[in-house]
Amino acid sequence: MTGSYGQIGTELIEELRARYGGENVIATGRKKPPEILRKDGPYYRLDVLDNDHLHNMLVDYDIDIIIHNASVLSAVGEKNPQLAYRTNVEGAYNVLEAARILKMDQVMIPSSIAAFGPSTPKENTPNDVIMRPTTAYGVSKVFIELWGEYYVERYGVDFRSLRYPGIISSETLPGGGTTDYAVEIFYEALKNKEYTCFLAEDAMLPMMYMPDCIKSTIDLIEAKEDNLEHRSFNVTAMSFTPADIAAEIKKHIPDFEIHYEPDFRQKIAESWPRSLDDSAAREEWGWNPDYDLAAMTKDMLETLSKRLGLKY
Ligand code: AKB
Image 1 (tube, rainbow, N blue to C red):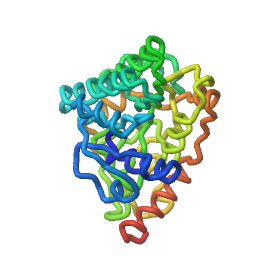
Image 2: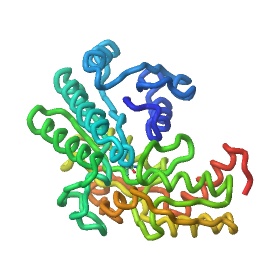
Image 3: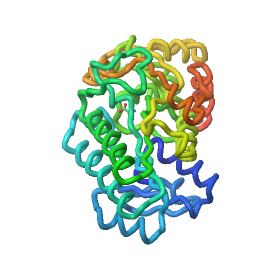
Image 4: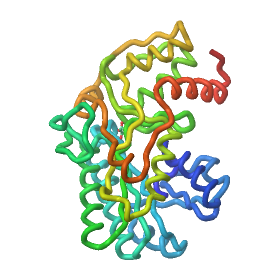
């Protein structure tokens, strides 16, 4: 896995190691890893833009499946589109080329709701629909989907991708996305009983709790290739606005208050779907989420308050 120390990587690695054995799941990344990644299996420094190193590692460790999580997210991508291009487009190109040349068994590269744009229907967005994103991150995700699908047809590479919605998690903070508010709000609610949101109160976006994110990723990796009509899938578990999640938190922390100071990220959110139709994932590999807004909020507050030692 590349980008293993990110929000999704840290928790996905743990689950993969529990299922397949620590020594069979290699965590890689560009930085010094958190302790958790060294705990149950190997961690190696790897920059996916270093193509020789990437190929050497895949050969030396006899890798069958690559999960390419290293990515610059939407908000950071708008501040530095050139970085988004290099990391997301060139990084994914290197990974897909390595999979083709080395005849690897499978490549999983996440996409995102950011692959959709302002001209995409916003409600119950279908799996197959117009995609004209207006962010650097979104453009890079469309490239990944189309280049991956081209490699399926042209070279028989087993490419798979999930269009992740905003992911809410209690272990590792997200790094520079538009949906990050839905994680920050829990930390601030527990620490200060107050949160200033960078999106408007009615900015509705599709979301998913981390256990569902892990489940969807592993289910798609394990799905029988013959059952897949698509290669890039919408997945979702709930849709809510900042006002909705604040109201849900208030049920547990009655004196919690939210304020709104929308910044440049509001425009990004307005260009994305408000809800997704994930019926292709349900039909082709049995996707079915476990957490809705109420269940996720309860679990987040319980888990985070224990970890941070904060009562509510
Ligand atoms: C972001 O906000 O950039 C990501 C995403 C929806 O892909 N969380």
